[in-house]
Image (cartoon, one colour):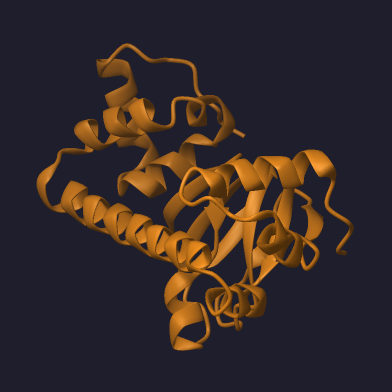
Length: 205
């Protein structure tokens, strides 16, 4: 259920966008008045595969995972997102097609809900919004390219070390089987890697 967005969460979101473009006060007023807040319980879906995507989300508290589900029922984790990160399905939004993956809360998660139609309206209003949109599209493309390169060129141990470097807090917040899926290896292989590099504490929820 939607709720009003707190002033603190709006401030976090504006600061996040302000790193990319200076948004005039009147533009921010137009934009922020059309936002909503929402809370997801653990295991709830922000986006479900096969559904149309109507919103993007800015996480103010919590943790989510992106994952694909095969016809055989096997899950493959695509990415994780935490506080002060943007969540959505760019390709599904641009193509106006059903999303092929799901986004699920791994913790109780609070978000600012940004309707896709609001974003489209803003693009026609001020260059700052186009700058934000271009930055977001570039960020998604860069992450995708780096992820592809990891799987083609790097060992599982190198991928794991990079995950620890980029998202050190995930070690305590994400169950080991989810981390293994993200790395494209089994839990047994992940345990061996952790032992090899001297890490023994795991989240095995």
